[in-house]
Image (cartoon, rainbow, N blue to C red; front, top):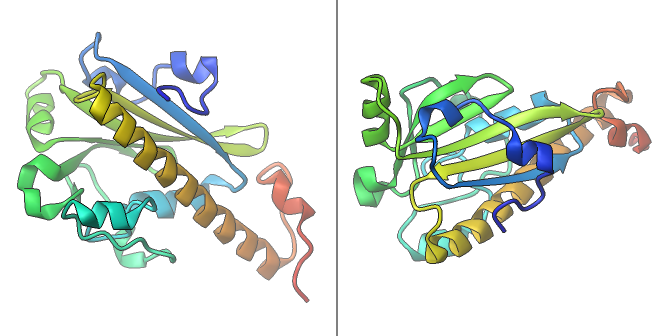
Length: 207
């Protein structure tokens, strides 16, 4: 559960954003392989949020606890311009308790989120009590999506179980959308660089 889908090297790896959390903070590291280039994945990742693209997870469960989540099935240009300091809402009705701030962003590579209070602490040179980060890494022609949670409620059984169920669904939902984007791109252009996305090279273009 804590390292679902992740290899030993990914679990042990130091990732951008780790340096912002307490050194002894408990961690989760989860990963999934996506048959798509990073350019097809990143737009789906940066548009997450309650009033944006949703979280590609179990929207009905999220709505049941008061979040107004509606998962997007298309890339929205108006949600692509994300910057450090911007807000990503989990559930606006709960205020800052359900708000994340972009603490670090490297396009097509890393997205690091934390609470507003933690973001303020980091700006003062202190450590965050909790960090949630997403990382895209090329691996043998595929892309690995690595999601890490550091500190916060990690280590509390009730949180760990619920968060695992929702985060795993999110990763799978993002994968399905990104692979669909890559497949549509391939079918449109009728060619693909196998080094960029080997699985797509096996697809027969639509006439």
